[in-house]
Length: 82
Image (cartoon, rainbow, N blue to C red):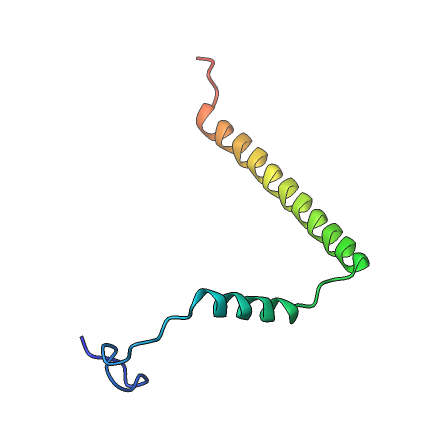
C-alpha cells in the first residue's frame, strides 16, 4: 500500500522518541494551567441550560414513544371482535 502524497517519506523510517514520565507530567501540569475555569455564575447557568435541554429531550422522546406505540397497537391490533 502506498503512502499518501501529503506524507513525505515512509512511515517506517520515522521513529518518534518517547517522552519520559516526569516530562509528560510537567507538560500535563503546564497545559492544565492554561485552562480557564468557569465562574460559579457561569457554571450554574450552564447546568440549568443542560438540564432544561435534557428534560425537553426526555419529554420529546417519551411523547414520540407513546405516540408510535399507540399507532402500532392501533395498526396491528385492529378490531379483535369477530
